[in-house]
Image 1: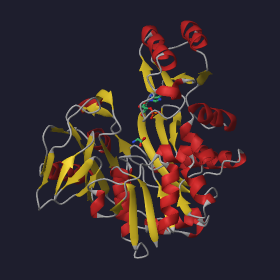
Image 2: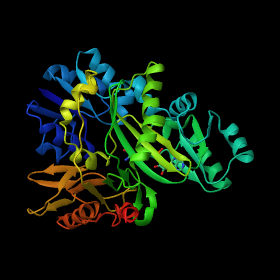
Image 3: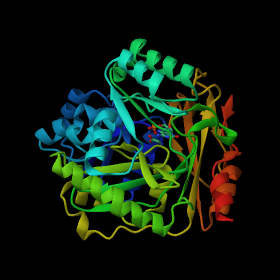
Image 4: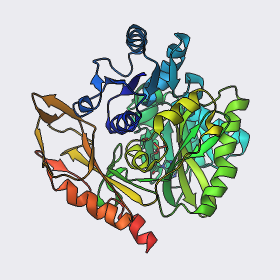
Length: 422
Ligand code: AMP
Ligand code: GLY
């Protein structure tokens, strides 16, 4: 098979490495891929949002199967366009991707179908939102831009002043662009966050092992929100009882709700959950694999990924026995100093030959036979072990074997999870 993976980060690198294990995968293209991905796939200089060029390429090359990994092309209808041209895909159509693309839609879906989530109000007008804040808000309060905002469209306001300035900056100054034409103001939930990625073909839901992201830039969950500074899987907070409750109250009802709305979801549905004192609740849905959750979940997948993806597309997921390895995995993200704000690029990366980690490239470029940095998140260094403790210590041991100018990483990935386990 000729396979095409749309995207170019650490998540896509992990997906490609998994797909490559299947002998059916004769040729893999990455659009656009990155420096590190070029070791595992042929990179093609087409942006992940350039739907027309993606479809043209797929037709010209006779692609048999496309995996659309990032949120933007999914929300923009890449899968619909590929399907119209007879190309099989893994990923939801645009109508289903709205579960991530519009918070107004996803909150409405949860309310309509009784899926637990934070209480909320929607506003399409800054003045009305400000009146609401004046009279009703409890603090902290959470203010979210409706549309995609590079995972950054959420402001947690600690008091009225912060809430007022959040509304103004999202709706009037449009700091998150057009995604701020509508906002959601919602209740602040407390608890531990867990990510659960699930395969679904619209009929069957198969949750993968749970994982835990570390979104803030600095140790102790301090500093700015980032795309994710590291992950562990599985999360010790996510017990069998909680998993059963999530299946019954969240996973199955969500897939059924999407069917009832004529938005059948096929692909990887990401449940961002808060384990609150009142039970698990949905913080957000994503219409795709998480990044860097994928980098710890896929190395634990025993069943062949490509076979699962084909089964999802052909709606025969029920026939596949999806299995995971026991043990645990830890991924430490090595980032460029300054990320998530401004940072330098073009620094040479050196990796010692005896490295014993899965190194997924997120922001790298090839420069001759060297790799140089080209993004905020540069590499994900992942180690799988029998125990969470050894996976964490192993990942940090391997990180020492990688160097580039101004590299930084959190020193406490998995620390909270480890403490919970003890
Ligand atoms: P999101 O982009 O929806 O994942 O939100 C980013 C982060 O904001 C989440 O990972 C949570 O840490 C936090 N967050 C979002 N919504 C809430 C909420 N209702 N209560 C508490 N924290 C939240
Ligand atoms: N790690 C969070 C996300 O992929 O959105």
